[in-house]
Image (cartoon, rainbow, N blue to C red; front, side):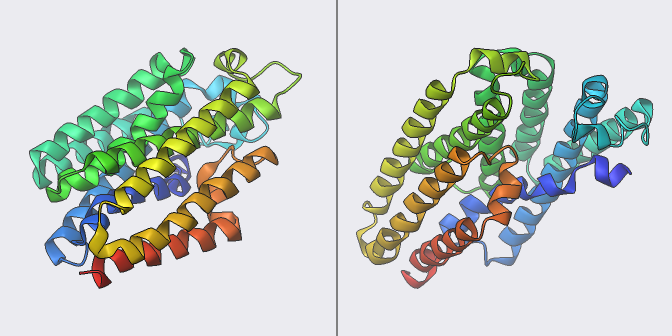
Length: 282
């Protein structure tokens, strides 16, 4: 029950630690690979601690939700005291391990916990800030990979990562709002959003990410063939995701990405072309 409460399906988000080392072409170095693996495990520990705390906090609300009522804390299979004890232990181990790899990574770990705690206690109820807080969590995951391996993160990397993160979170809010259209939303914050407003956010963030990625690709003339070709699956991926959101999907981005064959095919195509630019281009 403890493992299920830690939500291992959500750990796929922590694969963002691979982004910076892969982009730098260093992931094949044993030391870098070990540091990235350590950062991944640390983020799994920290995110699981956050999920446990959130489940304790939301247990009463989860019990009346058709899906969340099955979570171990809400279902009474894991006591709140035990969940909080495990959350504290996981957080301490995560911070300690992060600091052992690199002090800056320890700071990222503390920042991640501070961000998630702020979201749980306050930001989840604040219009716009709730989206930005969740998106910042994705960005911190990507930063963790760069910090753990001491890799410089370019402004292009930060812009694309941040825009894609906001895009995915806004899409999740859009899907939630559509599901509860005509009824009282589960979260009061949803009442302050509108479908046209969220569509505008999706359009702006997708356009900005596409322009930034294209601009980055064309700043690498020696690798232009590979990186230039990778632009198409990147843009098609954003378009495909938008079409799935419009069809009513998207409340669980990690499940949607892994379940939709077109998204998977575009992800693999982009990955092959991008890594071709990193390695074959050299």
